[in-house]
Figure (cartoon, rainbow, N blue to C red):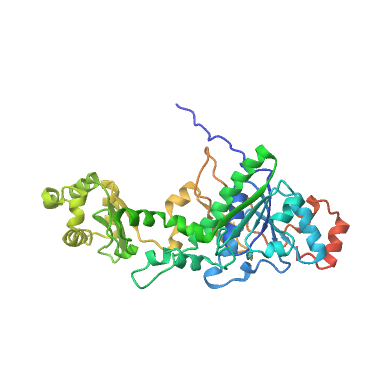
Length: 401
């Protein structure tokens, strides 16, 4: 009997790195969350009454609870003189600072890159903005603004109806590249002993995503149409209706898959049709071929169609809604959804980072914090005794704990 082999134990790669996070909404918090998940001690400095994202409703109600796990909360009036002293002391102990405030606002407070280089030369300063340096760098920006500006909204909706993507994809990507740049800057610091400025931006992130469309424009000499009107690179790449009123996406992307489709779904006439021998021929035949395939699929229930596609090794997916992921068997089996308690006591399951490294999956270590939950712990860690903390509390420099 072969003995079981345990996956190698990997120490969190950013263990021992202290990050001071001065952020709000998604762009900055997503960057901090990634670093926290990778093992960094991330101290979220928020106003004494809490990050404004905590109070959002509507589409923003989940922002704080998702993007602030594995962090400590220090509720601090950082704009007052005593609070500023606390913040500077904290930054002197830090390896990284993240901020996503309006361009120039940190420099006006005396906390810009040029100031912090003198306070802590080893500090990596991660600035997350709307635009990288250039003519637009002082413009305000939002995820939806740059989706419109960068062509993503145009490519997502049909002609004349630009449509933002169904999640804050640019904010998250900007935060991800900020985290990536920060890790690289820390590695560079290991060699040079000096920190420095890392910049990531929304507009350049969406432009990066548009690269494939720029490339096809250059190759074809004409811009591509929006995604709902595109000419697919594969003949069968559609959403199909089933007999029980459900929808399933099916993609037949190779000649081998086409042969298996014809075999498993008993479509001998299609298999023998010389007009359908290759994918490019099948693309030419789409006007009559897709309706024919739709007729075949419409005779199956969703469950039966999925089982047939699975047996035929053909790509497929039900048209799911976000809430369907809570009970997805694959996610539950591999631990991709971490049991999480949100501020206020709501219990749920939320996604972990979508990668493994040498058998290690970045875990949930702590739930998103309550306002000021770690005031005493953080302040004690930078040298404040009980009397000093009490004095700050009495002077309303600190929020609740």
